Length: 162
Image (cartoon, rainbow, N blue to C red; front, side, top):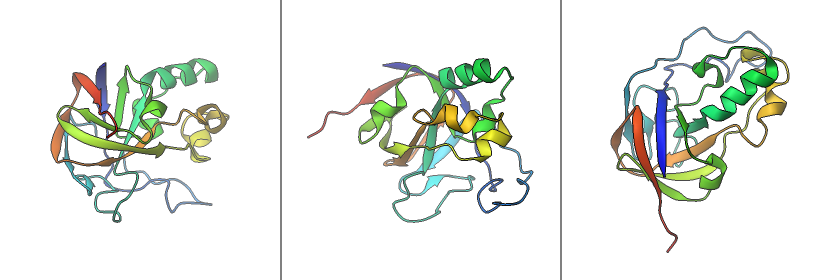
């Protein structure tokens, strides 16, 4: 299937994790045109790089069609970095990739689980955003091969199970 990788985002520091009961941090996301991925480790320069062995969220994906629907429902403009996911794209059902191995731009990934929204979404976007995003918060995945991921139109290939 053809997908369009529209935004790549990394953050060198957590702004929500570890801030429970307090204010979010102020470190902005960076939006490079390409990101370097390391198998089993994550995205070079991101807050979750080398976080822990076999981490399910070495990289996260988010469907921009969901962001569009959220903006329409909440009657707000939403910057792509508000959802704090790494790869924002169009053209694929991300929940359909849970438990599957897939290839994007020559890099293999293992879809691990839904990237569940947390209560911070209500502050980052608008009240009610966490509830709206349940079941469509994106995809957490493991990186299986090294590579460089770039913005642009690409083929996403779901590998058949053995």
